Each structure stands twice: as structure tokens, then as C-alpha cells.
Image (cartoon, rainbow, N blue to C red; front, side, top):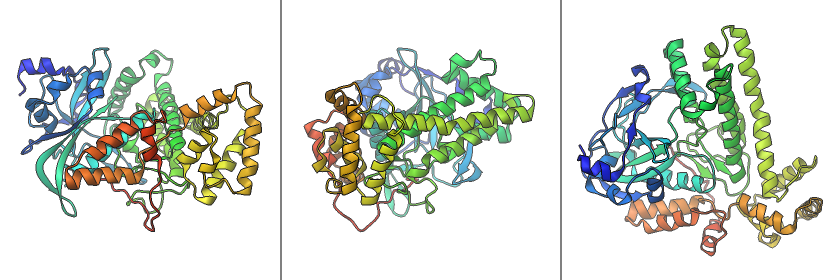
Length: 491
């Protein structure tokens, strides 16, 4: 155990409210100790925001805590149970390689889950070793921090340690553990698990806990459970729109990877789109494109319908009435998503007001991008500074016509050219975690032990809307390749 004085210096302030729920929701289990932990990267700004002492977190005792070799005082480690639809098929799941240490209460009173990912076997491991390799853990660190910089709700990464042990996948790989920070790890799949194998009383306790933790302002509503459903739908409508607006492809939108809090979670096979294409798929296991970029809004709606089904016994004592209320709420998702997406696209084009023709203006641009396989991020980047010579569309007749329509549209609003430029600059990132740059950083770290490439990339991604000179290098496209980029779940 960590000594008391070291705990005070470190700043851990654990509560364990989830562990107060019915024990069928989780299993109490300690992480499995590792041989020789070493701290690879520490997220100092995040640590400070959590009320933690950055210097103390680099001590041997703290590194042991990140590795699971000891448990910080106040922590009650658990592995959470959940289920979910994976590629449309329902199955029993759970934290197969993760342990929730507890909930850190920050100096401002906020509550965040602290979870070790790759910390060993649990009762939910389903034959797996419960471990993780260094590459995927660093990948999650990079992408989750990039998402945070882009202003997209996300789980975050506090630290990555190597374990001093090897794990076996196709080859022998260096073992690692990531410390993940989340508003909570309550998922659609958590509700599916309790709905399937629990009682109505237990389902109600989970719903009440979720409301208290994330949506306390609705707890006195006439029907707090339909309000809960609507809050989750609103949050996902905003989240998925933000994904689409930056070209993010999650890759594995199973119901266990949709959080109730509205945060992005699970950065296994995710990637960012270069050339605009609705059919973009990166995941090696998504053979039929179920989770392709263009399908993400529809999949979100499908997942939310599954969430709504779990709440039926709570929404109304009359099942038919409950189904009607839930169905109507889920049907609102498409409109809510579309409104969020349209607002975001207007901002990307510098439009402050609304006109009926805006949607066709947006769709025409995207159609041209797809037709000519031009880069999504850099096209908007070029438009932001009115440097159309920087886009491959510049010599296309249809783009010339579109550009004229866009300029006339800008001229019909009260805001000045500078104001439109300012809005576009805040809405179009100068840099994203380009797939080739991420792979470059991972290869240097994993194969050569060189973390400087990753550190430079993280610095470039820290403020993606700043358009700093240092970001120019990271906005460049990869060299042409005959091979399609593929990502893997990292299990």
C-alpha cells in the first residue's frame, strides 16, 4: 500500500459510489501486479485539473499504482459488468482487461472515474489475458487528447506505463497499462446487462444513480426516466455531429462503446478521414462497413433505440404507453443530429445565419470532395483563408460555380469578411491526428524507444485551431499509397 504521507502529497481523493450499487453490477478485484513498471508518459495538465501532484505522480509508489502493483488509499477496485450488441449481435461482456480504481473527487467537487486498462484478467475476460500492448495504449493517449483539443467530449488518458512483461498476440509485444479518466464508464451496455439479467428494482437503482451522477437537474421531473432518455439522445446527437464535422471514424460503435455521459470512449480501431468519402472504413474487423463514416449517425440512432428498450419498465407502467414515449424520443434523434450538424457546417463555411439553400450548398461541396477524392480537413482549411489554390478542386468547373454561390451567400449576411474568417478559424482545425503521423509516432516509440516523435505530435495537436507555424508540417498529406489504411482493436 502507498504510505499515508505519500497519498496526501499525490492528491488522490477517492470515492466509490458505483461500488455502493448492487454487487451483481461488478466484481471486486484488484489489478494483477506486473514485473517492472516504468512511466512512459504523464498528462500533467490533466493531473493538475484532477487535483493531483505531478511531481508525486512520478514517484515509484505512484508508478506502482498506475501499474496495479499497489492500490491507492481510498480505492475500492472493481471490474464492471455490462453487455452489448457487437456488430449487431447481443452478448455478455464486462471489463475484461480493466479495473476501476474509484472516482476521483477534484478540488472543485467534480467526479471522474479512474480506470486502469490492461491491468489483468477479470471474471469478464472470456479467455483473454487481460493485458494490453504498448502501441494501442499510446494510440489511445494520442487520439483521446487530440479529441479533447478539438473540443469533442471524450474520455482522457492520464498516464501510460510499460509493465516490463511481454504479451503474446500474433507476435511478442511489450505490455502496457493506460490510466483512463472518464465522467463515468456507464454505457448503453450497462443498462442492457441489468435489463437482461437484473430486476426492475436494480434497473431503477442504476437509472437513479445515473441521473444523480450526470443529470441531477432532471431528478424531480414528472417522468425522470423519459427525461433521462432524452438527455442521452441530446448528448449523442451533439457528439456524433462533432465526429462527422472533423472526419472522425470511431470504427467500433457497439452499444457497449456508447457512454451515457456523452463522451467518446474506446479508441481501438478509430482513425481520421483524409479524402472525403462516406464509405470510409479503417477497422480491420468491419468487413461490411457497418460502422463506416457515413453510417455513424444511423448506428447511433440504432444504439439509442436499444437503450430506450431497457428503460421501458421505468418510463410508464403501461407498456404500450412506455413504448410510444420511448419511440417518439428516439425518433427525435435524427432531427437533433441534423440540426447540430447543419449548425456546425454553417460555422465551417463562415455562415452566421440560416437560409433555405444552405443544405444544398453544403452537400454540393461534400459531393465534389467525394467525387474528386480531395482531403476533407485541408479543403476547409483552404477555404478558411480563401486560398482555393491550395485545394485540388480549384480547376474544376463545378467548384468555380460553387465558390461563386458561396461568396454571394457570405455577402448576404451582416457580418464582415473578417468575422466570417474568425468563425471559420474556430470551426476548422488546422491539424488533425493524421493516420501516417500517428503511425510514425507509434513506430518510433514502440520499435525504437523514441518518444520525441509522439511528444512533438501531441504538442501540434494541443491547440488544433491556432493555425500556428509549427502545425504546417502536420497538415501535409501522406504520400500516395496503393494500400488501404487499416486499424486494429488492439486487444
